[in-house]
Image (tube, rainbow, N blue to C red; front, side, top):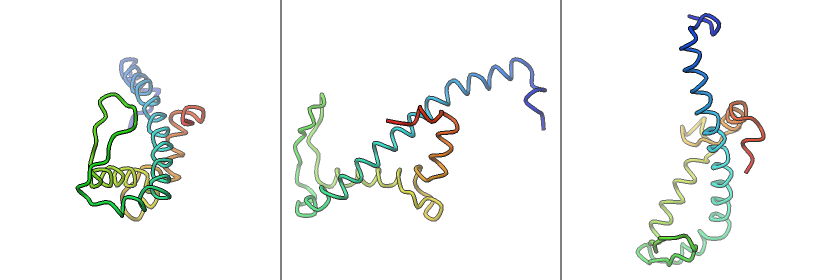
Amino acid sequence: MATYASLSQAEKDILTELGRLRRPVMGEIARLMNHLVALWDYYNTHASAVLTTVDNTEVVPDNSGLQNGNPITKAEIVTNMSYADHLTNTAAPTTGSGFNTATHRLNYQRDAGADSIVG
């Protein structure tokens, strides 16, 4: 195996560019996980109980204020929320799912820097 010092300048430049591209993305992933956890917590604490009373085919209007937002069914909301649960599931070592375990968070922080993962 080569050492970093033994790489050619062109190879070092490739790794430098990878770092320039990778580090901000790792920070984005960490910040996204923060938002997904907050979303899942709200859903789990408040909205899921309300949704259990609504038929799966019932359309829920879009009141988000986002441009081109569409009304979606209760089933679509539940499906989308399952994605958030899967992505943030901290039981990943046993289930094989989730990207927000303590190990993941530490790796995001080491790669992007502590200040880059807040938000």
